[in-house]
Each structure stands twice: as C-alpha cells, then as structure tokens.
Length: 66
Image 1 (cartoon, rainbow, N blue to C red):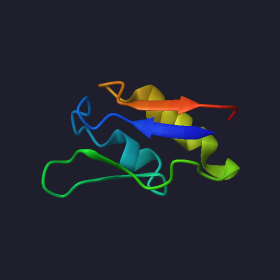
Image 2 (image 1 turned 135 degrees about the horizontal axis):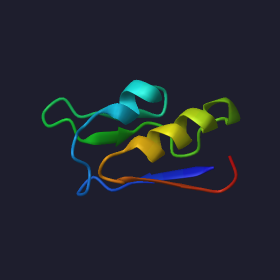
Image 3 (image 1 turned 90 degrees about the horizontal axis):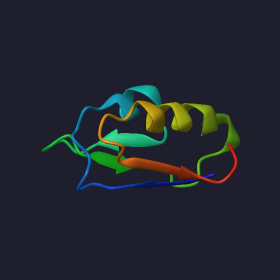
Image 4 (image 1 turned 180 degrees about the vertical axis):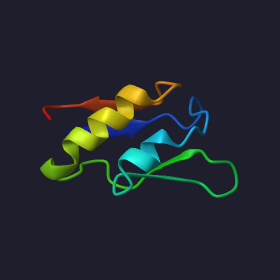
C-alpha cells in the first residue's frame, strides 16, 4: 500500500487523523492533512482505506493492495 495526499485539495475536516492517527495528522495552523506514513504496515491498511473513503475532499489516494 502506498498513500499520497493532496494538501491543496484538503479541506481540514480531520476525519483521517481521527480514524488513522498513526498514518495521518493535521497541521496546527490550518488543519491540513499531514501524512505520517506513506507506506504503513499491514495492520494499518484497513484504517488508511477507511480514512481515504470518508475524506470529504477526496484528498487521500491509496494505491496497491490492502
């Protein structure tokens, strides 16, 4: 699994950081997504997929097998 984020698209909703805090965080100043782990371990794949699927701005892209 490989994760990419589009900071320009991110609206700062924060669902990703709530769902997968080991993979995503938010910048303090504006709430924009911070990718902590672009290639998370397998035990984080389901949470990363869920975070991408609930992102209201579709700013998270997940590729590769989960």
